[in-house]
Amino acid sequence: MKQRIQKILSQMGIVARRKAEELILEGRVTVNGKVATIGMKADPLRDYIKVDGRLIAGSKRKVYIMFNKPKGVVTTLFDPEGRPAVKDFLKGVKYRVFPVGRLDYNSEGLLLLTNDGDFAHAVLHPSKKILKTYIVKVKGVLGEEEIEKLSTGIKLGDGMTAPAKVRRIRRTENNSWLEMTIYEGKKRQIRRMLDKVKHPVLKLKRIRINGLELGKLELGTYRYLTHEEVNKIKKETLNPKFERCLEFRICE
Image 1 (cartoon, rainbow, N blue to C red):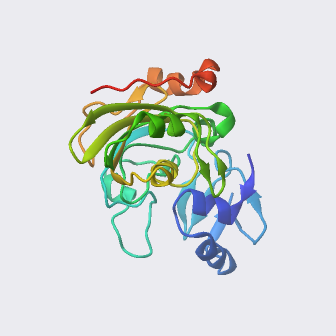
Image 2: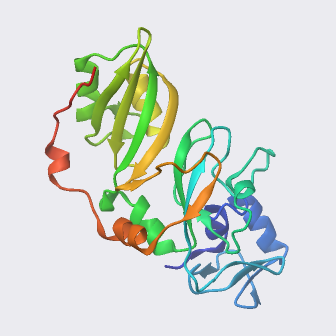
């Protein structure tokens, strides 16, 4: 699918969109050997895009990586503020890959990276309803009423959230541990949902994407997905019954 060059560079985490426009105006970006211009479109899977002569898209081999992102790492390939970025942990990866979606700076866990735009689209697009599961530590002890609100939907500034599956897995005197499964991708969605019920997030970790488990992958390390795992993500979609399931279980 063709997109504007500056959008491609931004989505791949190469530079911010405004900086991408500057690179294009300076003649430092080429598409299939021709100097790119503002407004030009390309397909990152089929067209060869280079920045300063370095190939950043167009590799024919498709690569799929699972990364266990630590807290305090930005989900981009470059950070203008100099903070640790995902790219810093990908030594040994010969292909230019980009993050599939985001995990915010203070969150950790399962992050996928690829150079396959169709795969990324399938994971991110709300219509595909790809399930993402998180372990969440929150302040305070949630009651049944609050869990039901989270399960049925919370009104945020950008609209109502879709039904979620929420399960309390542990609690202490001052905190609760939840397992939450959603398929939307609203910005900082889980943190905002829990803020709404007055139980701010203390720790957030993504452990599963559509049945693909983080497992025992060590923090800050990566591995390549198997063919079976890639096919699992591509083929499986959300069971329609999930949207109608508003029940929840509380585990003491």
